[in-house]
Every structure is written in structure tokens, then in C-alpha cells.
Image (cartoon, rainbow, N blue to C red; front, top):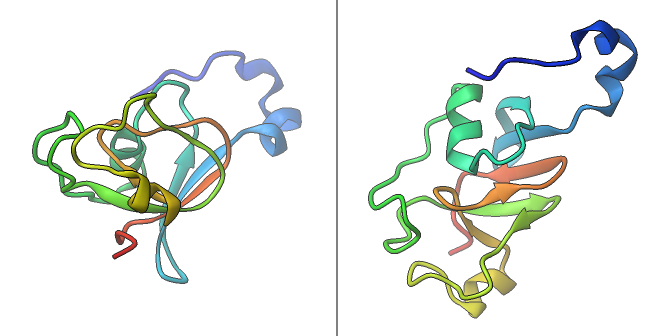
Length: 111
């Protein structure tokens, strides 16, 4: 659990807080506030959504999800579990993908 700092201005800054939303198609499964540096999988756990993982290093692709909206950092050199073809189809790996702002994630891979 992350501590929320700067709570004295929460009521006026709520609309400025980035949110990570988890979907299955059009169905909203859960959402949580963006925590800088946390991965998609960590955000999913905070939202009560389970994304399967195996290697937790980007090698196996078990945690592949689809980025619907927003920005998720990609490593300069793609790991074995991700390639250019999948990235073009908005695939991201939940174990290493770090949301940078408001994002919508479909927990299904783009296959």
C-alpha cells in the first residue's frame, strides 16, 4: 500500500490525479490512482484485478495486456516476451510496463 503524500490539498487536486483503469472489453473491472514507478501488475493488484504473471522480467509474455489509452513506458530493447509486431498492436507486458499517466488497460492480450 502506498502512502498518499500532500493530503492537505486532496479535495481540490482529485481531478488532477492520474488513474489506471482495467477493462475486459467494455467492462470496467477496477481502477486505482497512478503510483509513479509501479508496474501495471502492481496497479492491478491495488485495483483488485488479477493479471497472471510467471517470470516477472518480460521474458515469457504471460502478463501481456492491451494498452487502450494512455502511455506505458517501453524498454529501449524489447524483452523476449514482446516484439515490434505486438507493440504495434498496443501490447504491453504487465510485469515490466510502467504507466506514465491516465491509462486504460484491457487485461486481454491483442492476439
